Length: 554
Image (tube, rainbow, N blue to C red; front, side):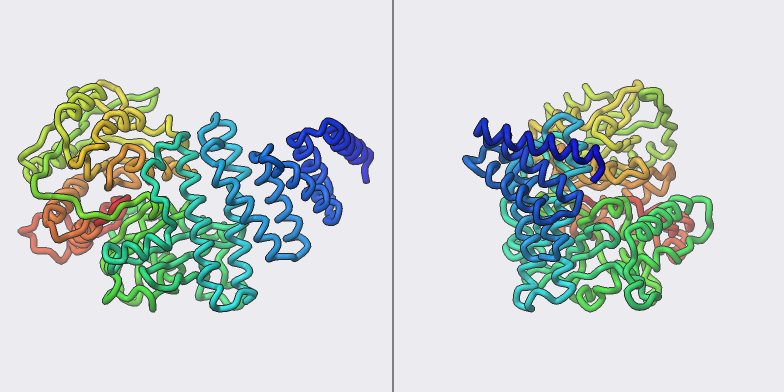
């Protein structure tokens, strides 16, 4: 042992003695925990476990250090894991997870530096617990009848991670005000009628590999690691790094589509084979009509509608309606009343400069606005200089609009402060202002059913940016949102939006299905008669893929 290590060890031993003399449970907890961590780093499991367990006892006494108890349970789990005592390790991880869930709100609404500490330090606990349970299932250590229970606990862990990240991103607990206390499995059972013909695909990104869970109401959860069918043996597992590169390649290929006459489906087909085809037996189109994705990390920025089935020569959206939600526990699937629809239409055509950043003219917004007005005669519009945060707020105070359509640049950044909608007069509508303007409607039965944002930009390269996009509907208290993953400054948006709203007004069509039919119409652009007046280039997914349905998909 190095002399510096000896010095550290002596200091840590002294702190344990001092805390014992003072009989202070909190000090005893941290002193013993730190000494346990020292021995963990030096791979002396016996000593590490001894002091970690002493830390747990001190923290647990009169719940004097509950904020540290999860740290020592987690530490004990790691030590037991290293000793290959897998089931004991999982029990420790589970206790750490449950304690953290209990105190999570206090941590997540703390100052930003503590929150980012949560993201980088605490988040691994959720993933470690999920990974440990999945590893046990993989080696067959769990009997068949226990597998369903184990997988349901994995689902709970993943769901809790996604909720925690959302709450952490927004830095408050408003996002979880509508949280259903029931777990995902219970919700699937209780809402089997609403969830009829709906399949749920949840992803979990772990060290080295990524897993997909598939759920149907009242059926056993299925789980698979993402694999490359062209590889053999253990090398079939697709590493998370390789998956992330493939996802980035897929997304950039879609965005480049404006420059290409024909879209190359090679990457889209590879991802289909990795993510969707393994569940082909479970998601037959005769029984499953809608797929709802609950994504993790970098997978949130992927328009799943554009995955390509090379066997059927179809995009995924041609077979299934597609929606996404950050968590089923935050989504209340319910068909809204569409009989008397009022629409508040907000649009910006002018160039704008916000915080030194220039946002170009949106030439197709007049066409988009005109299309919506023709469908919703009972509209109010605020365009260009008339569209500023104050006028928006005033309109909402006087009248409730079930539909709020915003045709303007919207930026979703790595932190909420960088998330805003560009308005007239070089002003911006922040997500907090949007929430404040809509919050007085939350108690009304006729509150906003649908928020549509048609020129969004999410920050590329950071999965937190798409948290803002996924959470915007929840944060501002609307039931459903349609938003774009990237901005398409083309008349194609007006074409897609008009068809979507026409379908949406048909009471028998769900939101996800209304979007699906609008996207399919564009995919078939070359086959439609010229009388339809649709540009044949719109079959390229760059024009239809970025629009996604978030939240309530019914």
